[in-house]
Amino acid sequence: MKARFVKLPLDSFIKTLVDLYEKGVDYVDLVGESDVMQDYIEIHFTDEYMCAEAQDNFEKGNDDNTFLDEDLNQII
Image (tube, rainbow, N blue to C red; front, side, top):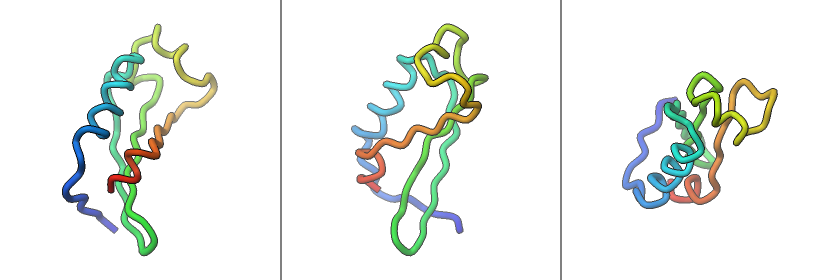
């Protein structure tokens, strides 16, 4: 089911993206879902999405990093 997220507070969303950028992530995939219980958004990135030096900022051995920010999920 496609979801349309409306009236997102940009402050939390931008802070989350800036935090990832400052840790070396250059690209992200945004995944949004809407179900009966909750609407949510996830930010995914892989090692290919960041500079080699930045990979030390994230857990090794995980090809698909998912950034679940509680504040971000609460604003949706």
